[in-house]
Length: 493
Ligand SMILES: *Cc1c(COP(=O)(O)O)cnc(C)c1O
Image (tube, rainbow, N blue to C red; front, side, top):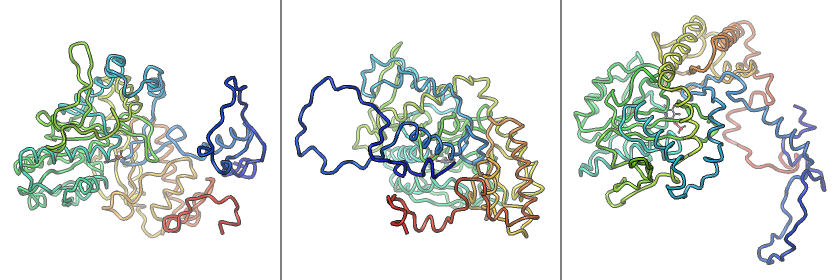
């Protein structure tokens, strides 16, 4: 991109008097605006012609990396392809032009779709009832924990404040428990990467509110002891929470409800293919087993005969709040419609293949690279796995360098330095939507980088070299972020 011509900021392209729009003649006449409603100074707006604006934004959009540009193996984030049909359905005027407060009689189709999604999620997860209201996985976790807290409170069991979280858990798990006012207790992993049940035994007691788990866990490993773990937690009176941010490996293979989980959330933006990243948009519906549905937030779509109605449930999170909404109306409606479209497009038969293919793709990459990258946990993984940097530790090349070098070859980096169990963690999740040719291309580049680490490490240290912005100073960017734009370059120094 030629920055001089197209500018980093649209303000840099502004030329006084330049216009890119044309207003129609005003047929209404002029009406005076009261002085107190008028601004004191002219608004500082860029003045540009249309073609300059189009080129500016088109060039900037090319600087973004997205699933539509290339392979995006960002572990735990499930950057799968988002089919265009999802967008077409979500954008239909019958959906997009609805008012959220419209009476139920006038939007039966939209309510039918919401109801259908609630039921589909129940069938997929094995849980009894779902709310579609939460806007993200992390919010779903918080809502789920509030439901668990309300359940204990409704039984007058107020001493349960402990939430057990594995040390491999996603960072949002302990954060959500803390935000909910509960105490986080960490359970260790065994050297094989699964929950240490001996350590778990020591943490049990009548103060346990819940245990939060992901299965397969964040290392991509299936927790084989899950029946024993759920029994231990249930026997001491706690509930099992399932972090279902990513259901990819599970689809068609098993269900959290059948594993004994009581409450869960699902990230529709990951598993059910809606565009996400950079903070949104998302949807984190929460499901509960039978007997907990009265603690779900309102509103909720119910079916009465042939009609769909919006129900405010009689109970809420706290005994003194009759109903409680955790967001606006039914949450992120467009995301919900994209996810429902994806589920219906694949159908029961094809959804069942998602888990198998996601698992196959991850294992294929792992096995193809483990001679040059350090695989701390051997064996079959599920939808993702973790390398601990390069196998050859003498090159001085770190995971950060590999991640930056990948950008030069048109690949998004994997998730790096997470989970925290390994110093040079590199978490790779290919998803089921990638072809063998794409995956082979990635494997070739990963091998090439491993080779360069030995032959020309400095080139990797300087990477990326082909991107609009080269290697940034992470520390400086974090410690001294420049978050405002000053018109003059001189002023910035
Ligand atoms: C992504 C993710 C979350 C958080 O979901 P958000 O929608 O980003 O809030 C929680 N747990 C796991 C395991 C995840 O992968």
